[in-house]
Image 1 (cartoon, rainbow, N blue to C red):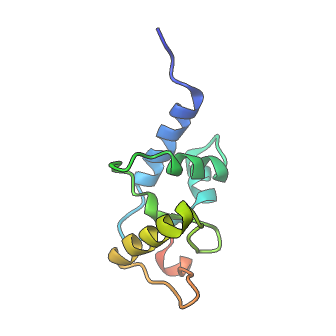
Image 2: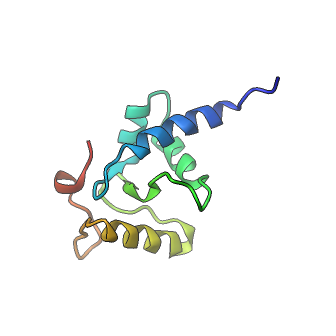
Length: 106
């Protein structure tokens, strides 16, 4: 019997936490790691980056601790993330920050 790699198991747990982030809210990588337990913010980033295009995990709701979108996908992914969040009602300041007091979860 073939066992799952450890990364697959932790990624599944990370994805379960991210699925709990409500529409119109965001959570930072470090907080997702805390809620998941047994992983780091970097691992959360890797888990989000490994999602297939048709995933039901709302990856766009995970941002950095400064309330900003972390650059990825040569800029395309960052723009897509911003557009998805704006479509959910998340607002950005002119310099690209999200008010974590207003839009942060939990």
